[in-house]
Length: 611
Image 1 (cartoon, rainbow, N blue to C red):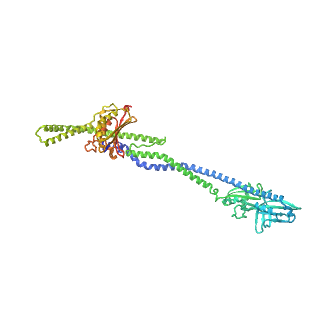
Image 2 (cartoon, helix red, strand yellow; image 1 turned 30 degrees about the vertical axis):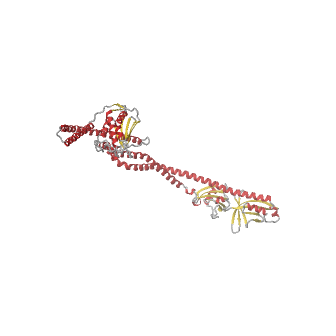
Image 3 (cartoon, rainbow, N blue to C red; image 1 turned 30 degrees about the horizontal axis):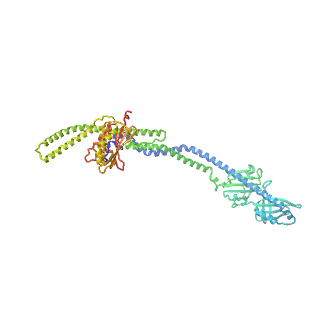
């Protein structure tokens, strides 16, 4: 087979035949409607999903925000309550430590005897000890004689009871006063009572760990008549002597000893107010512990904000879920739409991959069956149209051959008679020889054409194609050697048998090998004949290393009278196609871009057709 010869328009895979095209016109008309529909359907599915989930999402967001906000507020309340206990315990603990130190000084020094002898100075060792321990003020005080000694110039002391055991001291410096957490140890010299008082100032340095927390505020309010004035703040920037809100005072005096306010001081704090001592109708002091709303998550994480955040997150998740669902549904539909467009364009090999086990997957399976059926119908239609053409061509050919052969016979006989006369000149005899040769050539062409148009029905008998191939190879061996073409036969289906006509298959194989020799006539090459099975089918591939068949011409290779050979009739491959059809098989042509052409004979194995 010449590599430059190409295939048949009637069997062109991409070509929509008139009969099938009529069936596909509705599908082609649907193309314009399906193309944009998947997008609008996707949007509609997302909107529908949002509408269905909107109300439950609003309810869920509201409930979640309320529960989370309540739990968050409760945790803040518990933490602030424990912190207020810590502040109170820190004051009581500091007082007890100071009291113990004062007693230790009295028990292990000669403090009492010094006062009895009129000395008003501490022993240097005692003063050094108190200074090392970090106490701010040490004073010796007598109710009768006043302040006898103090490490700082103070004017007076005032006791501020916090309960039966706890107390604070207000120290007056003259122009200002300051509150001190102190412990007192009493002793007597003669009949005169004295008190050694050791303490620390209740200021921002008292609990430095609290002062470092800018978002946290601790305050102590002490009763002054009917009001409560601020005497301590953990933040040094806070202005002292602030008055406690009357509403908070009334709540603590008439209700529980601990009160949580989520909008304390005008909404600036979430705070706990603790009465000291607890259980008293009129507490002596009130401890305030609060978190600034503008500096912590506590203020930002309101129920409204939580609702908005949860709703937006739920909305985003709903949109994402809607998109995934829409894509899951519209993806197969888009594939089906693409398959319909491909089928409408004539690509009957188009298939759609079913996804899942739902109705859309069933639709994809049905589409694949339809595409396969349409492909079979296309092949069947091509075969019927080809047979119709060949039948009509055969009828015309018989009539024309009969009319042409009669005068050709007369011409040939007359020329032979004239040539046998000895009266002709050499030039005239030569001309008559030309006439006789051309008449014989025309007669051979008519005979070949008649055998193509009106082929002899094959006599189908069991045979082994490898025997036919070996016979053809043996016959062509001299020509293959002369052209320096190496022939290789690969039998990957040993013993394979088919039902066929030995002579007709021999004619097909001979035609293919001769065409391959013509294709490689310029410089030798390699010819490979490979036999292999594919299911119940025997494949015989004949591949040459010639220049190949251009892709644009491969579909016309089996057309009658189409040839690129200078002296070819264009009937060899067309006749091979007809013979293969008569054997219930077919022949295919392929040519890769790298060169070379492959013609593949497809024949049913023996017994496959009956099964």
